Length: 141
Image 1 (spheres, rainbow, N blue to C red):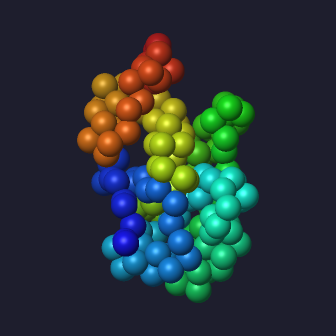
Image 2 (cartoon, helix red, strand yellow):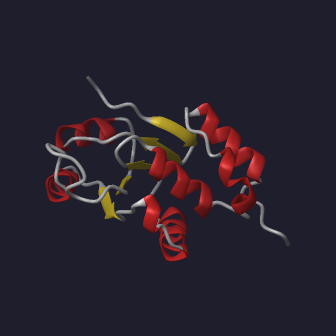
């Protein structure tokens, strides 16, 4: 079974957990940066961050480890994702267990840059419901 990459914008996609062997496919699909939002050790048999990072290094793709847990999600995590979204070579493929955390982090990091309705629709088109974040996605100017 291959990767289940779900584009949110032309520059950013979310995916459920990838394996080290998926990195080559991501490169072949044109991704320039991989962001891992899943902490090591969440589930038995989960690929280790270091193994995926080694594969990314071997294939010349940028790799960022930004592990989050939604219960402990902080403004600092959102700011870091926003910085990586701005600076990283695109397109970016972000992953976690199901892709939901990566999508939530992307959505919050784009608040004020993309209208809330567009963020919510992009997530919905990719199969993720971030409607409950609407109040956090509307930035008063």
